[in-house]
Image (cartoon, rainbow, N blue to C red; front, side):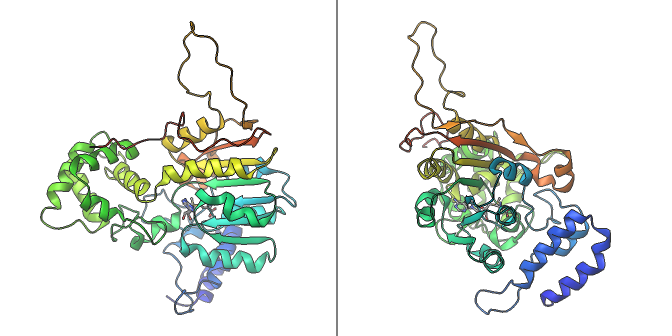
Length: 386
Ligand SMILES: C[S@@+](CC[C@H](N)C(=O)[O-])C[C@H]1O[C@@H](n2cnc3c(N)ncnc32)[C@H](O)[C@@H]1O
């Protein structure tokens, strides 16, 4: 791959064919690429495959080999939830490629961004240079967002865009995708157990319970049996190897999602302790925000969305009350103005099919004191012990 200047030239060649809004986004990405340097050699690095392609084509669904860099989802809705933004201090707990952070900064906010993935650093460096004094990047997990943001003044809002970024999915060596050959890793940060550790280390029943609880995989037992019998020959090391074993176990119907979709989701959730992180982050935001502060959460599957929905409104889906029992007096509400769930419209889906499953929920902090952290009533999926 050549230096970033070559990408600028390619972009200039194709730019007349690109709609204006995509061109603007393309230029932003090129800005970042101009500053992308390998963290060890300090040399320019090649962009993720598909960066330039993306600017001339629609981005593709999550599982496509043609996928491009991360396009922020429900961005207009996120900005609208915090408006007006001028002078507000917002914590972007899932920085990624900085799509939300940039838009918040452009609307006049001060942004404190957090991400657990060290590979986002070049994107953060770029925003730090461009918005000097208004953009701070703190590496870490959003479960501790209140402590990470504590030194940066009173915070007016927190946004979380839960899940995996397109860059993480698209880099085969990260091991997130069942479409790309790579080591079975799936860690968002470099420490902790990898997916290979779980796949090769868990007992069959434990593995089946995990795939069922975190992936809602109904054929979890059969998949777990195929995995444990395959690993008797040699440990399962790669993404495609695991995907093939799952396909052998449960088959593949034309038109259906890839048979490994749910199992990969379950493993990723387990490897990154995603539910624990989400619950901790919601309570951290509750402690951090004063009355009037806003929390906006974008999630990507029903298991996450249910946690967010119940956190904002403990009465939603809580245990039914008997008509014969005395009416229980509701606790003070920590969150008010709980907005109806928002989803991407046709126009956004046309630009970015990855927004298909995104759901945005937003609410405003009341003056009631923050609750102690508890899973009760949140329907957090639990892996049944074998
Ligand atoms: C969907 S992407 C966010 C994309 C971002 N909104 C943008 O517009 O570019 C999610 C990001 O959150 C990060 N992330 C996921 N879980 C995290 C956690 N528990 N703590 C901190 N960062 C996390 C991931 O590493 C990833 O970069």
